[in-house]
Each structure stands twice: as structure tokens, then as C-alpha cells.
Amino acid sequence: MRQKIDSSTSSEQASLGQTILKKLSVIEDLLKRKDDRPLTFKDACSYLGYAPSYLYKLTYKNIVPHYKPTGKIIFFSKNELDEWVFKSRPHLGPLPKGEDENASLSSAETIDPNQLEMELNEEVVIEFPLKSRRKK
Image 1 (cartoon, rainbow, N blue to C red):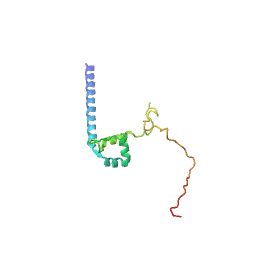
Image 2: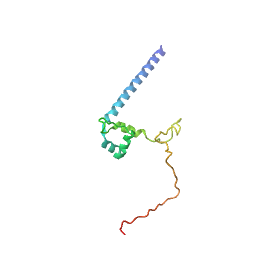
Image 3: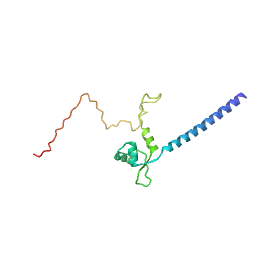
Image 4: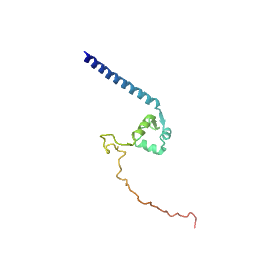
């Protein structure tokens, strides 16, 4: 008899725990949407600290999440911009157990084969001759 009570109590606790987790996720989504608002292109430039030409480039390549409801004017979601900024955070500190160092690199963090890495042991000074602007 004692075992039946314990098993029914543990199943009730498990279902209660699942209900609480569902409610917490709903509350979390509501809090995220509370701060969300549409940003114009100028607002997004100032919010991200990017030059307009660079933000245009990111939207053209579909790198940054954006919307064009009329087909011309660009709008951004503040929460989506926050998620986009924070998803590309570099890994700091030791890797968790079981993770390989190469597996943690995303495609954006891989080394470009067209770029050269050089180590300079000495300081290099390059002098450019200055042209005189005076007429001769």
C-alpha cells in the first residue's frame, strides 16, 4: 500500500514539474515580446553601432534578420537583433568535457584559406616619398 502512494505521489510531482516548466516558458516568451519593437533602418544602425552601408550589406546578404513589408522600407525586430548579436559569441574559457576544440568552431569562425598569417619579428618601416604640390 505504501508503494502505491509513493508512486502516485512521484507521478503527480512529475506532472506538476512539467506544468510549472511550461508556464515558465510561456512567461519567458511574454517577457521577451514585451521589449520587442520594430526598428527602422536608422534606429537599427544606431542600436547596433553599424554604418548604414555595412547594415545594407548585411541585409543584402541575408545575414541579419530583417523585414520588408512593403518591399522597400527595411524594418528590424529588436529581439531578433539581440539574438543575432549574441549567437555569434566566441567561446571563452575551457571547453566543457566531451567537446572537441574543432567541433566548437562555426562556419563563420573557420580560417579563410585566402588569408595569410604572418609573424613579424622586427618592426618594418615603410617610407613614402612626398610629392610637392608647388608648381615648378
